[in-house]
Length: 229
Image (cartoon, rainbow, N blue to C red; front, side, top):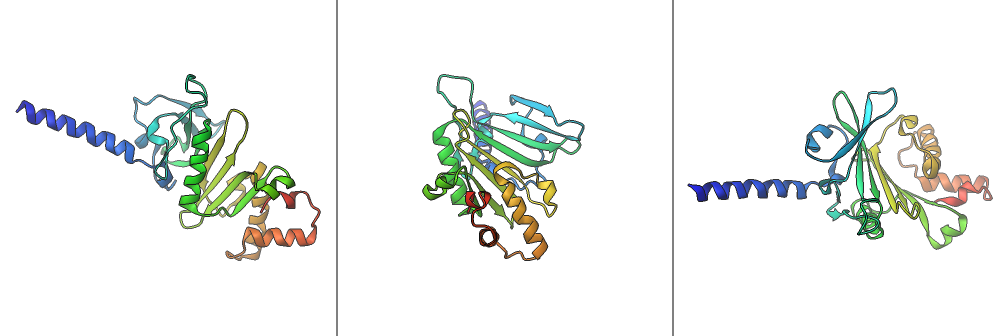
């Protein structure tokens, strides 16, 4: 009897470990997953309110969530430091705890490269590439990529080589017909301009490359037009 109980306990532990290792954050649909069901009470985390709203976000570094498209993103800036540890932020509504956005912060160079490759494997070529300077475009030294997952109704916003500390950041959010709701800015502001034109044309086949060609034809010397493809 003791032997049977022992094997049952081992089996339960194995199943728990398996379920954690099988979790892939890339599979989140951002439609009905609840942070309260994903993050257990015993996991170390930090929770922050978001102003006078019903939303808040949670920072967590648990390795369960550092798996993107079967790619392990566990790592840190320096092996002997407790700072600069790769982690995830979940954004959700406090009333129902449903996640509408998550962000992955990468502080280690290897995992930054691994995440980039995982994105390309999962989503293919990006629809939008941004460069810091026009000369960077010639050498394809990009600093931001965007994928629009029309089937899954998600946007993947990837920023690369941010600074000496943060090597990469991935923001995954629900896509929306309400362009203002997407809250696109910085490196991705020109994608927002494109969305307004696509919406006005009412043409789902109108690509960012179509938009950029039109803008370059209008003003080939416009600095902003030279910073993306």
